[in-house]
Length: 343
Image (cartoon, rainbow, N blue to C red):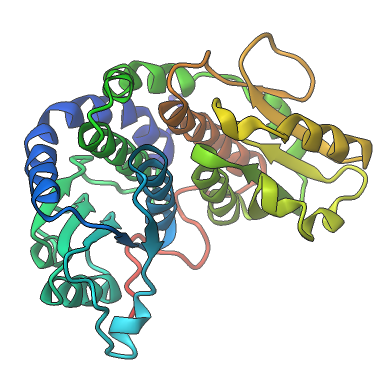
């Protein structure tokens, strides 16, 4: 009898191909956007997103601030949709990130941002959506239909699109090269064995995820997927913020997943991991190298931002298997539907 494959698994297996195709079809719209940016020279970028897309926007914030030195702030969409207040964004850049492009509060925020004089751009899978129409420039993800309620390929496609955008914007040859290598690395990342995490979380009730720099968005996305796909409470923190209070949650056997960055953001992380283990926590850390207790295998380092994208690909494979181990149908998460429309 053939084994049924979940929509989530099928779609995460499509991710490498989607990202490969993105390299070509995003080249022209990204170049057009970068030309507009060069003309307007925004001093601030304002992002707008919900759910997994908000985590992708967090990744974009890291990229823009780290490689371009431009401050990035997240808009509160209800300021437009509930309070009917327009922000003064004249001369600035507004960047919306969405899978469906159908969330009313994002659409209204984009329209008001454009009316105020902002350069507006949408990173969106549905290129003919209302959100896309509300913005001047559209960066279509090209991920195709995503049937799984639990988003995988659109999230990674959003991260890859933002990486390609910033690589072009910053004229960073290392980042451009990492974009070209990313599809092959994603395919390899999906096959890595994180069975130690599977055994740790199969009967758990709560878990903490930790990241920093390029992996903070990954930690946040992982915590969300643990909730919606696996019925497991997950909460994400930056490695720095975790010391400011949340560390009191740690007790014997408490599971903690650490998504380790491959850049300067690793400073202090080994000390934190050692401290947590001394307090009795079960800490699993993403690291390249040989398989050993406490290590979640990662690909050998390439470029730190692209490496972070590969980590979430491996995590998705774990989450799909973990949901089944916990007796859940990953394609029918409780109380959720594919498109969530908010105001």
